Length: 84
Image (cartoon, rainbow, N blue to C red; front, top):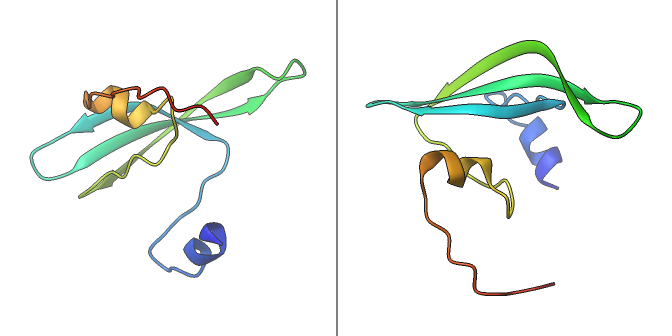
C-alpha cells in the first residue's frame, strides 16, 4: 500500500537497489548519500561504485531495528527487550 501511494506522488522518486551510506545534517537541510549495489551469488550486497545524494528539509528514519538513520544521526535507543 505504501509503495502504491508513493508512486502516485509526482514529487517522490523510488530507487530500489540503493543503500544509505552517509548522512549529513546541515543548518537548512539533510543530505543522504546512497551507494548503488546488488546481491551477488552468495547473497552478499556488493556496491557498484555509483553514488547519489538526496537532499531534503527532513529525514524520516523508518529503516528498522538496525537503523542507519538513528545510528548516523546519533539518536539513542533503549532496547526494552521486545521479541516478536
